[in-house]
Image (cartoon, rainbow, N blue to C red; front, side):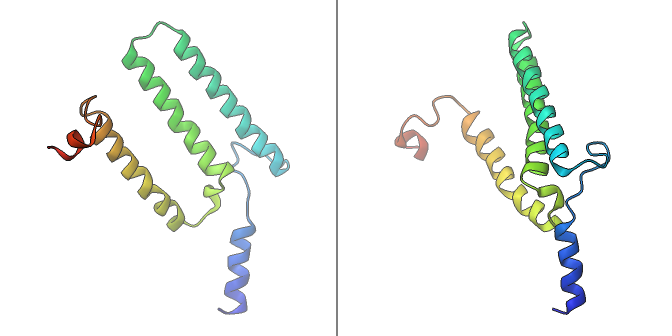
Length: 123
């Protein structure tokens, strides 16, 4: 690898600037504290959604929607994925896909589907 390519790679790696909507010239710690404040805000919204008298389906949509936003915040900023190359993000998406498939295929098909080995094997 030439010296110029290595220098360009190091510049990309060291560039941990926050988006403008989150960070306006302060230190990076201020950006992380703002992300943390948003996570606390969404957690409060989740608790309030549980305390309200919504139907089960509406409550689940609210909770899973907020959870998806919180996962994005944590993955993007605290796990530094917003600054990683796209290949890393695509690689991280593969286990999420299989987790969703397993959750839907096994967890929601029938409540007794995983009670014992005989039922799991279809015997």
